[in-house]
Amino acid sequence: MKTFPMGGVHPSENKLSSKRPVEVLALPDTVNIPLAQHIGAPAAAKVAKGDKVLAGQLIAEASSFMSANIHAPISGTVTAVDMQPNGQGVRQMMITIQREGDQWAEGIDLSKTLVRECALSSQEIIAKIKDAGIVGMGGATFPTHVKLSVPPGKKAEVLIINGVECEPYLTSDHRTMLERGEELLVGVSILMKAIGVDRASIGIENNKPDAIAHLRQLSAAYPGVEVVPLKVMYPQGGEKQLIAAVTGRQVPPPPALPIDVGAVVCNASTAVAVYEAVQKNKPLVERVVTVTGKGMKEPKNLLTRMGTPVSALIEAAGGLPEDAGKVINGGPMMGRAMINLASPVTKGCSGITVMSGRDAVRREPSQCIKCAKCVAACPMGLEPYYLSKMARKKGWDELEAQMITSCIECGCCQSSCPSYLPLLDWVRLGKQTVMGIIRARSAAAAPKK
Image 1 (tube, rainbow, N blue to C red):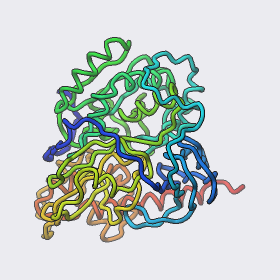
Image 2 (spheres, rainbow, N blue to C red):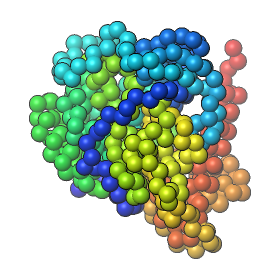
Image 3 (tube, rainbow, N blue to C red):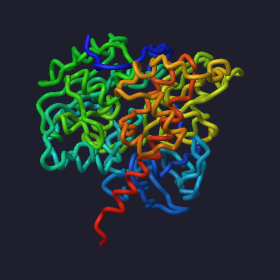
Image 4 (cartoon, rainbow, N blue to C red):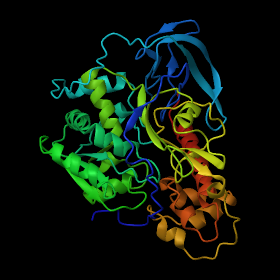
């Protein structure tokens, strides 16, 4: 069984909602839509307080090449364009819309009729994806039009679709592959045309045999598309780990990108969003979100409009359990703890995980016993104990020399540490600091205009 060559862990899967078909969540009365739902520059608001908008209408425009458009998820009146707290309590610019009915912008096809054939050119496909505000929906939120714009001198050889979903608890991609397989495969064929390749691999972990069988059956009608079963190992869904597992190629350290080994990677849900954008003129205004946790009465997969309060999703899954100790945006390995449940669902929100108080409490850390389990677990071949130590000592030059920017923040090191050291916390701090130093150095070295 294929997998990546080094490190990794196998946490309890806890896929509690894997058998739950996607349900459509009731429309919220009010949505808050952040202008920064993607990697890169925040979008620039195109509406003002008092404006009337339709669902699917452009309300914020990409402010640079590395940015993404944002569209109204509901119809109604803009009541504010102001700073609001996000899930971590950090204030950021958001557009607030009060819902009035559910009227959609002209030209958006909401029918369920499958449209297979795409006569558009590569450039036209990428332009439509950009217009629709599509970003990576596995959590990274990298603008898809940027990923598909292969730089001069580079050549794409294979498209890889990430259907791994290795994060514990989360099942939104799994259900999307099962319930929207045809749309996904048309999206794959469109992505192949966009980057000019005749080969695509859909990587799926072997704990989803139903998705593997379903997509294998459907993909027989799509030349060049194969389904690749993968060993169950976290973080199999990491971009570099997935490329290594599927192609055997290793992406060099930053600033190298997957395209440097001829690969372009897109998430399974992103492929469906590409289908809707190109074939149906529908922008990215909704997504499937898993709401789960051992204490939840009804773990669910909910089709949710962007900007919906997280609290509404939790209520739809039976409400917050009495013993809830932590609510995580994402899964327990790479997700972020939330302090504000009134914050909105965004393009990168694939799940909401509710942990009990007992599961959420961190164990008291003790001294490092030099066991090197964190080194063995690191899928990037780093030395987390040393990086953590140097981050505490503010040894930024040494951290850069030790390739801390290669860290993918998967949490394997911290989850494997018998001393319960907060390794990821320190490594994440060190990485952010070093990346800031590198950006500042590059800016200082750039020619003055």
